[in-house]
Length: 202
Image 1 (cartoon, helix red, strand yellow):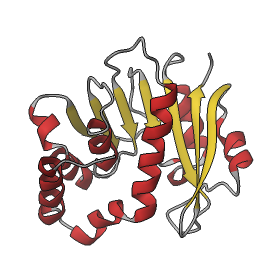
Image 2 (cartoon, rainbow, N blue to C red):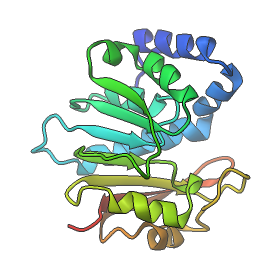
Image 3 (cartoon, rainbow, N blue to C red):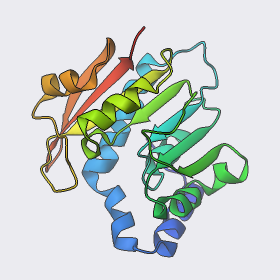
Image 4 (cartoon, helix red, strand yellow):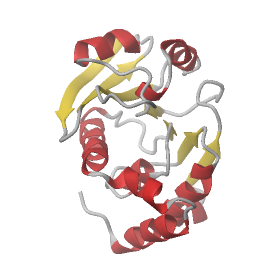
């Protein structure tokens, strides 16, 4: 996919103006970007064409890179909310998506995903490894039954990853999705990334 220069400008502004530019740059490692491209490509194949302008919530949205890439993907999208528990992410994510923020199509929200109420058509959680199984179960139970769910996790062992999956089948067991319409694995230089797309109870 292509990144246009105006969006790239706001990416650079967000990095430069963030409190910890090195930490913000972590969102642009090859594995991170390739995982997001993979998500967009697979979502584009299974999205509901009847929902011409879907509302998307990204839980664990970090600094807003996935949202920006979705907006630039050519897919039709109404609005994206990026929810993250880290209050430092809100300003960076809004800057990263400044064009859409100015027009009301993007909003970064500081909140715990486990207590946030979503009513979006598509709900994305690429931070499954950052929450416990109990927290995940609470999160899943709060998701509307007819919302498409996109999940990503990995097998990368670092302290902040408290619920990794050793393989794709283990990730399926953790997810409790009753209707999986896509499952796959992406090998990166440092870890294996897993993704599921489906519904919790449809």
